[in-house]
Length: 145
Image (cartoon, rainbow, N blue to C red; front, side, top):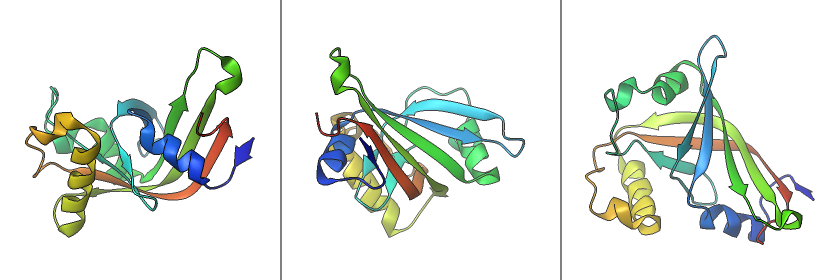
């Protein structure tokens, strides 16, 4: 089954997922894919550049630089199951931006803290947030399983 926008069961599967893979590309279209923690509010996807160990400052991370050069991104939420008849994924394609202040960043961080208890004690209040504006959401497989 292929969905063009999330059904209620697919939206629930997206929100239940603990990790997704964010694909960005630089101006030369060189791809970069990383795992991210995220939250989907039904309109946008948010992921914070958190305090886990990094080799460079937040704004120098490749994913952030790529988004600033080329805002077209894709996010894949896998739904793996040892029963391969229950496999599925959701592909969210859209335009990303980096939020660094304002009321929306506070809402995004609150939602992320509600989903991930690890963020409740992590100092992420001043961390950049990646916001994805979905232009297409495609689900494949058995959503909500």
